[in-house]
Image (cartoon, rainbow, N blue to C red):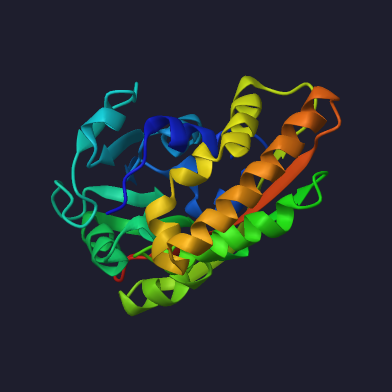
Length: 266
């Protein structure tokens, strides 16, 4: 399983559900009695569930360092071998977990085992991310970096739009999917995180964090060329920020897929 720092998870998921939560409507959160957030990480979705669910919400993650930052009920455990008896919850849900597992079907199977009603997944299609920017070179460079990264990563980080088929293969019924676009914008006044992201672009350090995957996808020479172009783009970002001209919009498509455990009723 791919692992991420708490800072990375908090940054990438910041504000995801700050606007509409309509995409979660098929989870019927207002009627839930006991909910599990599998692979909860730093708890961005867990906190949303706590706000919407009248019953108990439990987080579960394999990383003890992430759980230590979670100020909510949580249990350490592997998503493919959950430490709960059969039928322990009336909803098991995950967010951006299946894309990071070498065997997402094993996790879906165990979600089905411990749920007595619904199973849900909120998963992105990271191959369909779009970037708009006032720095002309940034969208094309972001696309190139993403394509190389996808070639080098060893899990399916694009599977969001295909979770429905996996749910149905696991025997889940009445499977439904809604698309939800997580839009992240950078504009004046710039946050501390936005300024730090610009610095990482200008130095190339941010791209270096994914060096192994990028090299695996396209080789070391192509990586060095991309990194040099990335740094040049980053310097343009910093210059525009200094003039307060820089704006960026990134759209990540998520798919909220919900299925019913066989033998239960609507």
